[in-house]
Every structure is written in C-alpha cells, then in structure tokens.
Image (cartoon, rainbow, N blue to C red; front, side, top):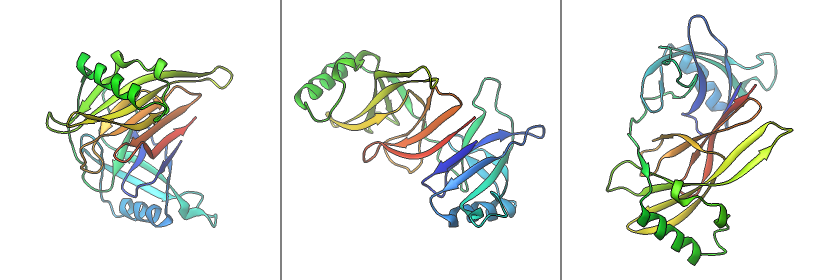
Amino acid sequence: MESTSTRPDLFFAWFSSKDSDEPVVVNFARQADSRALTAHCGSGLPVYSFGQNARFTCEARPHEADSPEAWKAAEVIVRGAAPKSGAQRFGMFSLKPTRTTHWNTRAVTPEEQAALKAWIDANKPRPRLPAKQLKLAAATAVSASDERPTTLVVPGNEVRDEPGQYYAQRHYVFVKEDGAYAYRGMLPAKPTGYFDIDGGDLPAILVEEDCDGWCVSLWRISKGVRSVASFGGH
C-alpha cells in the first residue's frame, strides 16, 4: 500500500497492532519531509490521528534503503489502540496534534435545493455541470456551526468500468455563504469523512472509490477542489 501527500504534516497508514505490522510506503512532495518523518519516529515521538487527535507510536525507515532514490519515500508502521470492529482499518496521521472540529451534516432544505437549482440555471454553461444528473434532493449540507459557511455536496453522474472493476458516483461541491452560492469542483466519489486540516471554515473531504483494491483520497475545497493526499494499492 502507498500513501502520497502534498503536505509534510499528513500521511495515511494502517492502524497496526502487535499481531499486524504491514508497512505503508509514504511519499511526500519533498525528500526533506520523508527524512523528517523518519527522524520523528526514530526519536520515539508520537503521531496524531486526524479527527480524534489520538496519540500513536510510529516506526519509519527509508524505502528501498540501498537505492539512490531511498529518501523519496519511507516505510511507515503506526501502532496504537485497535479501531473498533467495523471501523476503518487505516487512518490519517500528523507529526503534531490535530484539530478535533466536529462537522455537522444534514439533508439540504427545500429552500436550499430551490436556490441552488436557480443558481445553476443562471450560471450555465459555466460551471460545466451534468445538471440533469445532479440529485439535489439527495445533497448533504456540512458545516462546523450555524454561523460558518455551509458546504453542499451533491451526488451526480455514475461512472462504471466493469473490466477494470471500477465504480464511482461523482459528487459536486458548492459553498453557501451569506445566502450566496459558489461552485468549487467535483469529487471523484461519495464522501466518507470530513476533517479540519488547516483551521478554515470549510472541511477537507475524504472519499473512497469502489475499485480493484483501495482508492482513497483527501480533497481541499477552500479554493476549488484540490487533491491533498491519497492512499491506495492492493
């Protein structure tokens, strides 16, 4: 399994126990970030899970230590309390304590549906959206509080590749602030979690595509939908 991240303070790994120690190959944008993670774990310092800020111990070593490219990635094992039965087997971790913002989720109201539809109709053909396939009534509203901007995540078109064993339903992200709407972009699949990774008013969104293996990714939406990190493999 492999974790790729654009941020030096965020990576994916398995929740490991004494009986399970499968490492994850962690790639960062810079070699210095891989070295920092290896040194951090080697010093006995903890890592922290996003969402709960729980402490875990970690082990890290250069991936393919004999290769000239060794420091481009690290093999990482995270150990701690095993997740509850039925919970995700993997987590997102940081070298420093993480925020524990609670994101409230609810169904969109009929008023929000009508306002969003009117905004989409008024802004054709930009943004380019599969308007006829948007399921506005099934949209989810996400916010940290009533006073903060609201993220609206709308299910859209389905993508299937039977030979490739791939299925996903695209989701489209809008933000409502002070009664005004704005389109941020498309997510490749249905959200499975919301996280506060930078202290902003909008969540980072975790999605998981149905593929031949693991296809997990984290996306920022503050300035458009942008990839932050991914976790995948067989």
